[in-house]
Image (cartoon, rainbow, N blue to C red; front, side, top):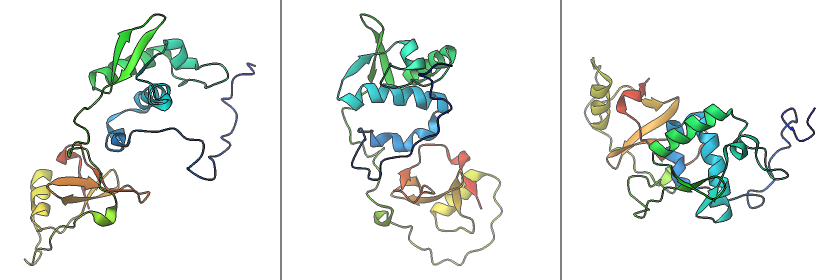
Length: 201
């Protein structure tokens, strides 16, 4: 058995306080995790760690490194080579990263938004600061809707007898946008999906 393989080792736990043993992670990703598969997220996180995590603009990262990692530093993503290649293509096409040719391996860099912070992706400081929908004084009635779009429009107008959810997490329409409240009690996140993905209960 390979001594460097820690696959069967149990996770030891996180540090007691978040102020130690961490690296910076871009907050803008809060609203985009749902757009990536697990494999794509692992590859992106690995690139983030080796660029943003070291205050570097870019980094040369080989497919072998992405798969197995760097000795005495990390264990890579653990993904297969074809899965890594496919994930990289999707991340590049999606505008998360860009690739150039390096001296020893491909060089990866995060795609920058020089207009950041953009109102489109800003998160509220707290769920308490998020304005609520003004209560409509019209008496609620039973509505028969032929589509989720009509349900959404009715909710925006305050004529609602159903509540919106995205993958089990509560939603709200405010400031002209849809917001999602994570089940872990974190900040409201701007919804970047389609209204057809909203569930009504």
